[in-house]
Length: 292
Ligand code: 13P
Image 1 (cartoon, rainbow, N blue to C red):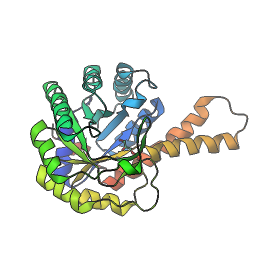
Image 2: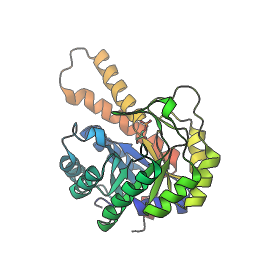
Image 3: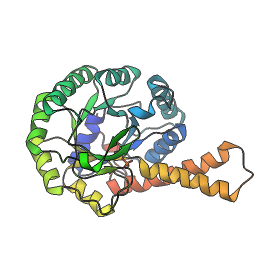
């Protein structure tokens, strides 16, 4: 199966009461590991690429081409969406769609509501004309997503009435309301706004995305799914597993020099992490239920 749009995946997840994992890419080993884990678990999967990682990975056409080639190479048959994470402008979203991404997030959450609505609407119109899916954000999620840094003083929980306006006036397919989750490691006990999450899901009727999926206790993840979360973003846990495996390998093999040896260990660690998340999110075995 080639790349598919994320919308159908999330609607199926809503019907089935589970969430689909968005696993962010850092390099080719991440893409290989995530695709293989999803295939093994018969799970739909979303490959996320943060705007800040695009230059590091050789640009949008290179990333889309690599992902398509790997899908062919591994004979991946589960549904895979390729999603731009935290796109900051109309231009980057359009360039991602033209490169073959099947989904984009326009993150205009740092703008006043009216301007967020205006920019998100333009992106949604363009993306829908190309058969792609759009995610938008309201409120401010704390933490660091590479160059995107939101400190604790700037954190804002999403306001349900504003979410309803954003949903109605833009036609987006998925909403990421900031409700206390954090990009990167959590400091202290996470406190997600579950009541508000459920209100926002009910009032907007949209599948919700939970950013900052790393480091959250399993019961918070399960509770978020019960309250309407259909997409869970994970980056830091995979990066930490990747780096720890390299560190371990090099400590044990101080004379190693062939990168394939330590990168294969790192890739195995990412695969194991993704398999565990897929089980936790309830999407294992759900690939066959994809109805598009
Ligand atoms: P973590 O790095 O905390 O898993 O967050 C990932 C994310 O939300 C990407 O948008």
